Amino acid sequence: MTAVHWVMLNATAFMYGFNRTGIVGSAIVCTPLMLMFFTPATVLGVFMPLLVAADLVTIVLLRKDVVWRPVLRAFPWAVLGVGAGWQM
Image 1 (cartoon, rainbow, N blue to C red):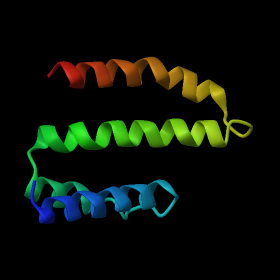
Image 2 (cartoon, rainbow, N blue to C red):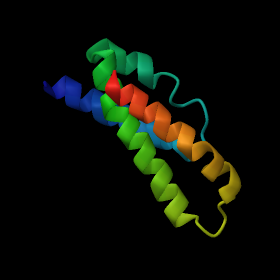
Image 3 (cartoon, rainbow, N blue to C red):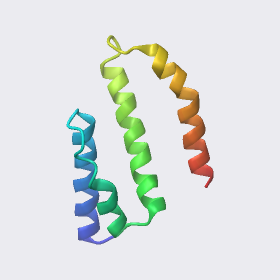
Image 4 (cartoon, one colour):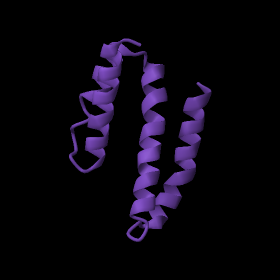
């Protein structure tokens, strides 16, 4: 990877993280920007674990305020989706 790739990867990771803080819409440009420099499989392989880790950190940090019912209801489907994506 070139320096441009590293800068783009870090910038889009920052924008995705910024989007997760509640500033909705800041990540809209991230995916097309990443696809200009990487293949779709690489983009998915980089950002899916990043987003899953961000969700887990959020749950750990805010565990007192988490409404567990929707989380537990969505969890099996999320695991199924990640597993299906991993197999492709």
